[in-house]
Length: 298
Image (cartoon, rainbow, N blue to C red):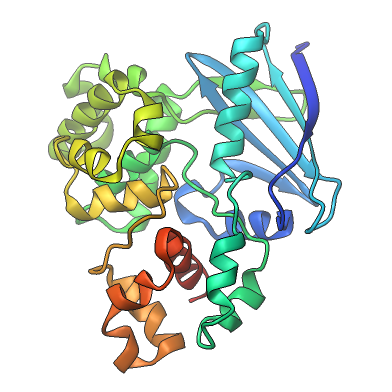
């Protein structure tokens, strides 16, 4: 099949280390087997308003002068609007334009955190591909093992994802909110074998179908937190999880995050780590990055 193609270059905000992006994706369980990594190239399927794309990206620059070459492939015409939307989705997913300067400046005065910076220097957070996917994962993992949650997620992809074929492989996208919001809830229950998760996924899909993602990315933190907490199935912990890992909102850290406490204890010791909020506040609006770096290294 001949695919429509668009290609070009992207220039992430330095420092940016694409190798660390790839290393994170290799261990990121929620997205296991959902992308191909070959050498220094990442290939992933994304969906924009019902149109599937394959996004390929490789590094041609350095950490301090980063440059990426990208290729967009689709079995439908790539308009300027869909091209922009696909590039926005891919670059937001990889946090290419996050500015780490103030984060690193604050870290320079934190002797306990210095080993973490040395290990992850140039790493930009790899988010969930969409905040909706993050919300679905938050629901699937509620009182459920990660292995079972992953199997349920794969079932959603097989049933509702859009496939796109190349000469070498077939890839499928994670469903967009509209694809699940219009589905009958009992079909989701039959697919997942779990009525409550089907109910919550359906509610989340309806909510994300109606919301403008620009609001989620840029509205005041408290307003977005309130919106998320009012979605059926999304509680306080899940809301803050989505704010950081789906939306890149680094202003706050969930102080009750047990994994963060374990990670902080490893580098700060028990006495300091017991006051997560005080430690996090030293990083201001970058405290989400501080927490994410700790969790990745730990």
